[in-house]
Length: 104
Image (cartoon, rainbow, N blue to C red):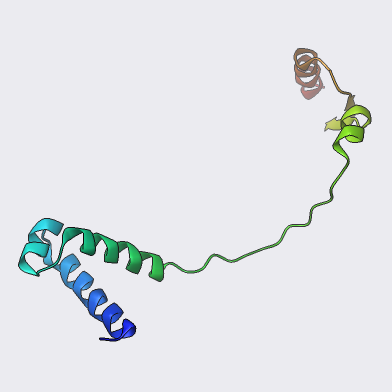
């Protein structure tokens, strides 16, 4: 039996098992198959039937982390206001400022 014929034969067996309504153990006892073989082919056929995920590429720009962490601030805009944060800012103060600006 060729590889393609074996795959087709196992696919038919899996279809028979699924349509039988029996447990894997019961079906395997009546069909001269080990449960481990059935489970293997269930996984293999499921994986073969899954569509290939579409691949997409993302562009990344590498930045010198040592320079960036020390010198580049982060800007946040809330309504018409801009907040510039530098390394070491207090998050509790930022939270209070943002809540206040949302009411303006």
